[in-house]
Amino acid sequence: MAETISTSAQDPSRRDFIYIATGAAGAVGVGLFAWPLIDQMNPAADTKALSTTEVDLSGIEEGQQIIAKWQGKPVFIRHRTQSEIDTARAVDAAGLKDPQSDEDRLVPNQDGQYEPQYLIMLASCTHLGCVPLGDGAGDYEGWFCPCHGSHYDTAGRIRKGPAPKNLFLPPYQYLSDTLIKIG
Amino acid sequence: MSGYPGYDPKSGFEKWLDARLPIVRLGYDTFIFPTPRNLNYWWTFGAILAVLLMSQIITGIILAMHYVPHVSMAYDSVQHINRDVNFGWLLQPLHANGASMMFLAVYIHMFRGIYYGSYKSPREVLWIVGVMIYLLMMATGFMGYVLPWGQMSFWGATVITNLFSAIPLVGDAVTGWLWGGFSVDNPTLNRFFSLHFVLPFAILGLVILHVWALHVPGNNNPTGVSVKNVDKDTLPFHPYYTVKDGFAIVVFLMVLSAFVFFAPDALNHPDNYIRANPVVTPAHIVPEWYYLPFYAMLRAVPDKLGGVIVMFGAIALLFVLPWLDTSKVRSMRYRPLAKLFFLIFILACIGLGWAGAKSPSDLVFITGANVDGAQTGFTFLWMARILTLYYYAFFMVILPVLGLVEKPKTRPDSIEKSVLKSNAGEA
Image (cartoon, rainbow over all chains, first blue to last red; front, side, top):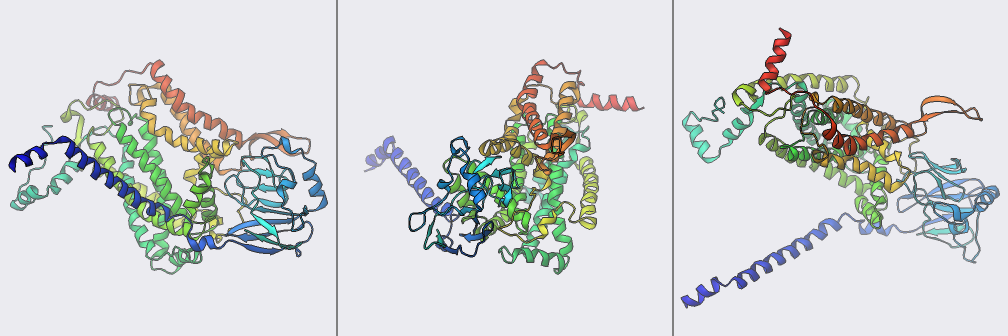
């Protein structure tokens, strides 16, 4: 009996196995416990549940812009004038920093028609998230971000400055000609 | 070490305690510590920072008793502290201005370290721990500025957290994780409050490591010459430097008091007296003054990711500074060229701060006008670009090359001789 104990105590492979198995179980345990500690910072269920906003476009006059809120974020809804639309469409999209045509910036309504007068975009500069100034601000008479000087044109496309992308479009759909659902 | 006999417990109780918990010995070894006899007033900022850190922790714990970290109440609770809480008018400005003064002191402390080569062997780890403290200070100061929930708080938080959206692929996931939502909102304010409360204790822990790392090689000194003879070159830290540091602390606290009592909002921004409004960005947002040089670097690059990299890189460079500077001579007192470039470096940092406070398209000086009659000239954007280039060149080109080509002046044989020589000169 004594002989058996001394043999097993001196068996290095058995010790190594227990040592490594304990270490591995410990590492997995730490990893499993770390994930809840990290993931708790992601948006909570009630925050994520604030998913959709409906906006009636009929009250917005031509040349007027309103800010709706969706998921706590401001959303620009602009009723563009014909000259703004024409200016946006006269640009060769291929030469832009983030190439998109004016129609790429729109979503067709329930009949499959574009309503180019209504431009709906997130009101966060794609540089560092400030709300750009509207109503023809900036060198391209669309939007201008006062924080770090990004200029957007009348289709909300980045034309000059540090922002890497055009103003983002929120997911939305037309429920009727003048009612949209964002989200 | 003949002049430093070490702790000698006298009474029976002291001997009994020393055998069980040698805490008196720890304090003795910390304060009766051989310190170069030639330290000038630039060396007092470490002690000033220690006092400010304790002041920030104490006033911060008190403010947390009255502050409410909720988007609908945070702004009012800060007003409540300033107007209604007993002595709140004293404690809140002491905390806010104390933070500014801590950055002023840490910048002087860091410039001193660079000028006298305090990061060089064998003090590299001491320096690196210091840079880590500085990084944590930046994070803590930023989150503290968000808590009053004014317009600058909100939009500062938006801009800084959006810096992380520049990270390729995972950027948006990271910002959502930082916010706990789809934008800066109540979850963000809550976690910033929690972290702002706890990070100063992490700083305190690093400060202990910093002091420990200082006690291994001992202080650097204005000559950069190592201590050769403890009896001749050094004095015990207490009472010589406790008194010198104490005097400097009093003078520095007078500066802090001048702000607290006579201009408590001078370093704040008027827009932070407007409640946070998530749909209106102030026309000109600026961070606190102590981040302005980095803000200028961020804006100097016309590319989002590039700007973020340049900004964080400016701090990352400090971590490797001990290996970028190739000169064996510690003190720039004996490096005429390095001294000149160092002076320009300080001016570049101040100039970057100036550029960070201005709109990039503002003009530094006017050279003429364009056809529309608008003034044209040298913009702050270009000034920031040139100075950012100099900042990087100072660390990546000038310091590495100077160590190889510069001919240093003769250094004194010892700290004692440098002291006696200057005394003889005055007599």
